[in-house]
Image (cartoon, rainbow, N blue to C red; front, side, top):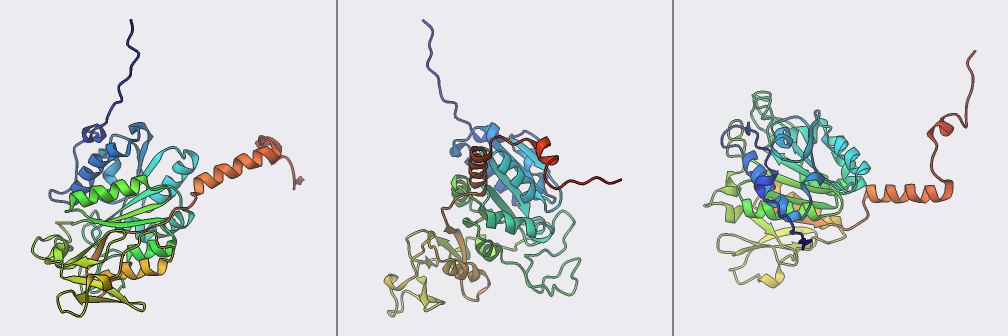
Length: 343
Protein backbone atom coordinates (compact mmCIF):
# COMPACT_ATOMS: atom_id res chain seq x y z
CA UNK A 1 0.00 0.00 0.00
CA UNK A 2 1.32 3.42 -0.95
CA UNK A 3 2.13 5.80 1.89
CA UNK A 4 0.27 9.02 1.15
CA UNK A 5 1.44 10.89 4.24
CA UNK A 6 3.50 14.00 3.67
CA UNK A 7 6.23 15.48 5.81
CA UNK A 8 6.43 19.24 6.19
CA UNK A 9 9.82 20.46 5.06
CA UNK A 10 11.43 22.82 7.57
CA UNK A 11 13.87 25.23 5.99
CA UNK A 12 17.11 26.12 7.76
CA UNK A 13 19.41 29.11 7.70
CA UNK A 14 21.62 27.23 5.24
CA UNK A 15 18.71 26.95 2.81
CA UNK A 16 18.61 30.75 2.60
CA UNK A 17 22.30 31.07 1.80
CA UNK A 18 23.14 31.44 -1.89
CA UNK A 19 26.62 30.03 -1.34
CA UNK A 20 28.27 32.99 -3.04
CA UNK A 21 31.43 34.43 -1.53
CA UNK A 22 30.42 37.34 0.69
CA UNK A 23 32.36 40.39 -0.41
CA UNK A 24 32.22 42.81 2.49
CA UNK A 25 35.20 44.07 4.42
CA UNK A 26 36.24 41.69 7.22
CA UNK A 27 34.56 42.83 10.43
CA UNK A 28 31.72 44.70 8.72
CA UNK A 29 28.42 44.75 10.59
CA UNK A 30 26.65 43.60 7.42
CA UNK A 31 27.82 40.05 8.15
CA UNK A 32 25.76 39.99 11.33
CA UNK A 33 22.66 41.37 9.59
CA UNK A 34 22.98 38.72 6.88
CA UNK A 35 23.46 35.91 9.41
CA UNK A 36 20.48 36.98 11.53
CA UNK A 37 18.31 37.33 8.42
CA UNK A 38 19.15 33.81 7.28
CA UNK A 39 18.49 32.46 10.78
CA UNK A 40 15.18 34.30 11.12
CA UNK A 41 13.72 33.62 7.67
CA UNK A 42 12.81 29.95 8.37
CA UNK A 43 10.78 31.00 11.43
CA UNK A 44 8.46 33.12 9.29
CA UNK A 45 6.95 29.98 7.76
CA UNK A 46 7.14 31.34 4.21
CA UNK A 47 8.29 29.30 1.21
CA UNK A 48 11.69 30.35 -0.09
CA UNK A 49 10.11 30.90 -3.51
CA UNK A 50 7.92 33.65 -2.03
CA UNK A 51 10.78 35.77 -0.68
CA UNK A 52 12.08 38.69 -2.73
CA UNK A 53 15.00 40.95 -1.80
CA UNK A 54 15.41 44.32 -3.54
CA UNK A 55 18.36 46.66 -3.06
CA UNK A 56 19.75 49.90 -4.42
CA UNK A 57 23.43 50.90 -4.49
CA UNK A 58 25.98 50.67 -1.70
CA UNK A 59 27.60 48.05 0.51
CA UNK A 60 24.21 46.87 1.79
CA UNK A 61 22.97 46.55 -1.78
CA UNK A 62 24.93 43.32 -2.29
CA UNK A 63 22.46 41.63 0.04
CA UNK A 64 20.29 39.95 -2.67
CA UNK A 65 23.35 38.10 -4.00
CA UNK A 66 23.79 36.31 -0.69
CA UNK A 67 20.16 35.30 -0.12
CA UNK A 68 18.94 32.13 -1.84
CA UNK A 69 15.71 33.87 -2.85
CA UNK A 70 14.41 35.90 -5.74
CA UNK A 71 15.90 39.36 -5.79
CA UNK A 72 17.17 42.34 -7.71
CA UNK A 73 20.15 44.65 -7.34
CA UNK A 74 18.48 47.89 -8.38
CA UNK A 75 19.74 51.42 -8.93
CA UNK A 76 20.65 54.16 -6.50
CA UNK A 77 17.80 55.09 -4.18
CA UNK A 78 15.10 53.28 -6.14
CA UNK A 79 14.79 50.08 -4.09
CA UNK A 80 11.50 51.15 -2.39
CA UNK A 81 9.98 52.02 -5.78
CA UNK A 82 11.01 48.72 -7.38
CA UNK A 83 9.90 46.77 -4.32
CA UNK A 84 6.55 48.60 -4.32
CA UNK A 85 5.92 47.46 -7.88
CA UNK A 86 6.75 43.87 -6.98
CA UNK A 87 4.48 43.84 -3.93
CA UNK A 88 1.54 45.58 -5.60
CA UNK A 89 1.55 43.15 -8.51
CA UNK A 90 2.28 40.08 -6.35
CA UNK A 91 0.73 40.71 -2.90
CA UNK A 92 1.39 37.11 -1.82
CA UNK A 93 5.17 37.68 -1.90
CA UNK A 94 7.25 38.66 1.12
CA UNK A 95 9.17 41.64 -0.26
CA UNK A 96 12.22 42.97 1.58
CA UNK A 97 14.40 46.02 0.94
CA UNK A 98 18.08 46.22 1.89
CA UNK A 99 19.39 49.78 1.83
CA UNK A 100 22.06 51.96 3.43
CA UNK A 101 21.63 55.36 5.02
CA UNK A 102 22.91 57.12 1.90
CA UNK A 103 20.89 55.03 -0.54
CA UNK A 104 17.59 55.16 1.37
CA UNK A 105 17.67 58.63 2.89
CA UNK A 106 19.50 60.72 0.30
CA UNK A 107 18.59 60.01 -3.32
CA UNK A 108 16.01 57.47 -2.15
CA UNK A 109 14.35 59.62 0.49
CA UNK A 110 11.30 60.49 -1.58
CA UNK A 111 10.59 56.85 -2.48
CA UNK A 112 11.02 55.87 1.17
CA UNK A 113 8.52 58.35 2.64
CA UNK A 114 5.86 57.52 0.05
CA UNK A 115 6.23 53.77 0.61
CA UNK A 116 5.67 54.49 4.32
CA UNK A 117 2.63 56.73 3.87
CA UNK A 118 0.96 54.31 1.45
CA UNK A 119 1.49 51.41 3.88
CA UNK A 120 2.71 49.08 1.17
CA UNK A 121 3.56 45.67 2.63
CA UNK A 122 7.34 46.02 2.42
CA UNK A 123 9.98 45.09 5.00
CA UNK A 124 12.56 47.88 4.79
CA UNK A 125 15.92 47.30 6.49
CA UNK A 126 18.08 50.39 6.90
CA UNK A 127 21.75 49.50 7.35
CA UNK A 128 22.79 52.67 9.16
CA UNK A 129 26.54 53.15 9.62
CA UNK A 130 26.33 56.97 9.37
CA UNK A 131 28.80 57.05 6.47
CA UNK A 132 29.10 56.38 2.75
CA UNK A 133 31.12 53.17 2.80
CA UNK A 134 31.14 51.98 -0.82
CA UNK A 135 32.40 55.34 -2.13
CA UNK A 136 35.09 55.43 0.54
CA UNK A 137 34.03 57.52 3.49
CA UNK A 138 32.01 60.63 2.66
CA UNK A 139 29.47 61.93 5.18
CA UNK A 140 25.90 60.67 4.80
CA UNK A 141 22.41 62.01 5.69
CA UNK A 142 22.75 60.42 9.15
CA UNK A 143 26.31 61.56 9.94
CA UNK A 144 26.43 63.72 13.05
CA UNK A 145 26.94 67.48 12.78
CA UNK A 146 30.66 68.25 12.85
CA UNK A 147 31.63 64.88 11.34
CA UNK A 148 35.01 65.09 9.62
CA UNK A 149 35.17 63.00 6.46
CA UNK A 150 36.82 63.12 3.05
CA UNK A 151 34.00 65.33 1.78
CA UNK A 152 33.78 67.41 4.99
CA UNK A 153 37.42 67.88 6.09
CA UNK A 154 36.47 70.72 8.46
CA UNK A 155 33.37 68.98 9.78
CA UNK A 156 29.86 68.56 8.41
CA UNK A 157 27.56 71.56 8.86
CA UNK A 158 24.45 69.50 8.01
CA UNK A 159 21.89 68.50 10.60
CA UNK A 160 21.36 64.73 10.21
CA UNK A 161 18.15 62.85 9.60
CA UNK A 162 16.67 60.92 12.50
CA UNK A 163 15.39 57.84 10.64
CA UNK A 164 12.90 56.84 13.34
CA UNK A 165 11.41 60.34 13.47
CA UNK A 166 11.23 60.38 9.68
CA UNK A 167 9.40 57.05 9.63
CA UNK A 168 6.95 58.22 12.30
CA UNK A 169 6.22 61.41 10.35
CA UNK A 170 5.83 59.50 7.08
CA UNK A 171 3.27 57.16 8.62
CA UNK A 172 5.09 53.80 8.63
CA UNK A 173 2.89 51.30 10.46
CA UNK A 174 5.79 49.40 12.07
CA UNK A 175 8.95 51.11 13.29
CA UNK A 176 11.81 49.46 15.15
CA UNK A 177 15.55 49.68 15.78
CA UNK A 178 18.20 47.06 16.53
CA UNK A 179 21.99 46.74 16.86
CA UNK A 180 24.22 44.60 14.65
CA UNK A 181 26.13 43.30 17.70
CA UNK A 182 23.02 42.10 19.57
CA UNK A 183 22.10 39.10 17.40
CA UNK A 184 19.22 37.72 19.49
CA UNK A 185 17.45 41.06 19.70
CA UNK A 186 18.10 41.70 16.00
CA UNK A 187 16.53 38.34 15.14
CA UNK A 188 13.49 39.18 17.27
CA UNK A 189 13.04 42.54 15.50
CA UNK A 190 13.41 40.93 12.06
CA UNK A 191 10.75 38.38 12.95
CA UNK A 192 8.40 41.09 14.17
CA UNK A 193 8.98 43.08 10.97
CA UNK A 194 8.45 39.99 8.80
CA UNK A 195 5.14 39.21 10.46
CA UNK A 196 3.74 42.74 10.20
CA UNK A 197 1.10 43.53 7.58
CA UNK A 198 2.09 46.85 6.05
CA UNK A 199 5.25 48.93 5.83
CA UNK A 200 7.72 47.59 8.40
CA UNK A 201 10.77 49.80 8.90
CA UNK A 202 13.72 48.39 10.83
CA UNK A 203 16.78 50.56 11.38
CA UNK A 204 19.91 48.58 12.21
CA UNK A 205 22.87 50.42 13.69
CA UNK A 206 25.75 48.82 11.82
CA UNK A 207 29.46 49.36 12.30
CA UNK A 208 31.68 50.30 9.37
CA UNK A 209 35.07 49.31 10.74
CA UNK A 210 36.92 50.87 7.81
CA UNK A 211 35.45 54.38 7.50
CA UNK A 212 33.45 54.93 10.70
CA UNK A 213 34.71 52.41 13.23
CA UNK A 214 33.24 52.67 16.71
CA UNK A 215 30.32 54.92 15.75
CA UNK A 216 28.04 52.94 18.07
CA UNK A 217 30.62 51.69 20.56
CA UNK A 218 28.81 53.19 23.56
CA UNK A 219 25.78 51.10 22.63
CA UNK A 220 27.62 47.82 22.04
CA UNK A 221 30.56 47.74 24.48
CA UNK A 222 29.82 45.58 27.52
CA UNK A 223 31.13 48.26 29.86
CA UNK A 224 28.85 51.04 28.63
CA UNK A 225 25.84 49.62 26.78
CA UNK A 226 23.60 49.12 29.81
CA UNK A 227 23.77 52.81 30.69
CA UNK A 228 23.23 53.99 27.11
CA UNK A 229 20.61 51.64 25.63
CA UNK A 230 16.89 51.54 26.42
CA UNK A 231 15.14 48.32 25.41
CA UNK A 232 11.55 49.19 24.57
CA UNK A 233 9.08 46.51 25.67
CA UNK A 234 5.35 46.81 25.17
CA UNK A 235 3.46 47.29 28.42
CA UNK A 236 6.62 47.69 30.52
CA UNK A 237 8.12 50.78 32.18
CA UNK A 238 11.17 52.43 30.63
CA UNK A 239 14.04 51.24 32.81
CA UNK A 240 17.75 51.14 31.96
CA UNK A 241 21.16 51.22 33.58
CA UNK A 242 23.63 48.55 34.61
CA UNK A 243 21.84 48.20 37.95
CA UNK A 244 18.39 48.90 36.45
CA UNK A 245 18.46 52.03 38.58
CA UNK A 246 17.42 54.60 35.99
CA UNK A 247 14.09 55.28 34.37
CA UNK A 248 12.20 57.72 32.18
CA UNK A 249 9.00 59.45 33.10
CA UNK A 250 6.89 62.08 31.37
CA UNK A 251 6.55 65.51 32.94
CA UNK A 252 3.72 66.85 30.82
CA UNK A 253 5.14 66.46 27.33
CA UNK A 254 8.75 66.47 28.50
CA UNK A 255 10.63 63.21 29.11
CA UNK A 256 12.79 63.16 32.24
CA UNK A 257 15.51 60.70 33.29
CA UNK A 258 15.12 59.83 36.96
CA UNK A 259 17.16 57.96 39.56
CA UNK A 260 15.18 55.07 41.04
CA UNK A 261 17.40 54.92 44.12
CA UNK A 262 17.02 58.50 45.34
CA UNK A 263 13.79 57.84 47.23
CA UNK A 264 11.91 60.43 45.17
CA UNK A 265 10.87 58.23 42.24
CA UNK A 266 9.66 54.67 41.87
CA UNK A 267 8.89 52.28 39.04
CA UNK A 268 5.24 53.29 39.35
CA UNK A 269 6.13 56.82 38.23
CA UNK A 270 7.77 55.70 34.98
CA UNK A 271 6.53 55.94 31.42
CA UNK A 272 5.01 52.61 30.37
CA UNK A 273 5.72 51.91 26.72
CA UNK A 274 2.71 51.35 24.47
CA UNK A 275 3.79 50.35 20.97
CA UNK A 276 0.13 50.32 19.84
CA UNK A 277 -0.43 53.93 20.91
CA UNK A 278 -2.58 55.63 18.26
CA UNK A 279 -1.04 58.98 19.15
CA UNK A 280 2.21 59.27 17.19
CA UNK A 281 3.29 62.20 19.35
CA UNK A 282 4.71 59.95 22.07
CA UNK A 283 6.50 57.76 19.51
CA UNK A 284 8.11 60.90 18.12
CA UNK A 285 9.31 61.87 21.61
CA UNK A 286 10.93 58.44 22.04
CA UNK A 287 12.64 58.71 18.66
CA UNK A 288 14.25 61.96 19.82
CA UNK A 289 16.00 60.36 22.80
CA UNK A 290 18.92 59.65 20.48
CA UNK A 291 19.74 63.34 20.18
CA UNK A 292 18.97 64.34 23.79
CA UNK A 293 21.82 64.67 26.30
CA UNK A 294 21.63 62.17 29.13
CA UNK A 295 19.02 59.97 27.43
CA UNK A 296 19.60 56.37 26.35
CA UNK A 297 19.24 55.28 22.73
CA UNK A 298 15.95 53.39 22.27
CA UNK A 299 15.96 49.99 20.57
CA UNK A 300 13.04 47.67 20.01
CA UNK A 301 9.60 48.29 18.53
CA UNK A 302 8.84 52.00 18.67
CA UNK A 303 5.27 51.71 17.39
CA UNK A 304 2.94 49.46 15.44
CA UNK A 305 -0.37 50.26 13.82
CA UNK A 306 -2.72 47.73 12.28
CA UNK A 307 -4.40 49.16 9.21
CA UNK A 308 -5.22 48.15 5.65
CA UNK A 309 -2.38 47.92 3.15
CA UNK A 310 -2.12 49.67 -0.17
CA UNK A 311 -1.88 46.47 -2.21
CA UNK A 312 -4.95 44.91 -0.58
CA UNK A 313 -7.01 48.08 -0.98
CA UNK A 314 -5.94 48.37 -4.62
CA UNK A 315 -6.89 44.82 -5.56
CA UNK A 316 -10.18 45.13 -3.68
CA UNK A 317 -10.92 48.30 -5.63
CA UNK A 318 -10.10 46.58 -8.93
CA UNK A 319 -12.43 43.69 -8.13
CA UNK A 320 -15.21 46.10 -7.26
CA UNK A 321 -14.65 48.00 -10.51
CA UNK A 322 -14.88 44.74 -12.48
CA UNK A 323 -18.22 43.97 -10.86
CA UNK A 324 -19.53 47.33 -12.02
CA UNK A 325 -17.91 47.68 -15.45
CA UNK A 326 -16.83 44.14 -16.32
CA UNK A 327 -13.40 43.05 -17.51
CA UNK A 328 -11.38 45.85 -19.02
CA UNK A 329 -10.55 46.13 -22.71
CA UNK A 330 -7.34 48.11 -23.19
CA UNK A 331 -7.78 48.54 -26.97
CA UNK A 332 -11.33 49.76 -26.53
CA UNK A 333 -10.18 52.18 -23.87
CA UNK A 334 -7.38 53.59 -26.02
CA UNK A 335 -9.73 54.19 -28.95
CA UNK A 336 -12.53 55.78 -26.96
CA UNK A 337 -13.17 59.10 -25.29
CA UNK A 338 -11.27 62.19 -26.38
CA UNK A 339 -9.83 61.48 -29.83
CA UNK A 340 -8.81 63.70 -32.67
CA UNK A 341 -7.16 63.43 -36.06
CA UNK A 342 -4.11 65.41 -37.14
CA UNK A 343 -4.12 66.22 -40.88
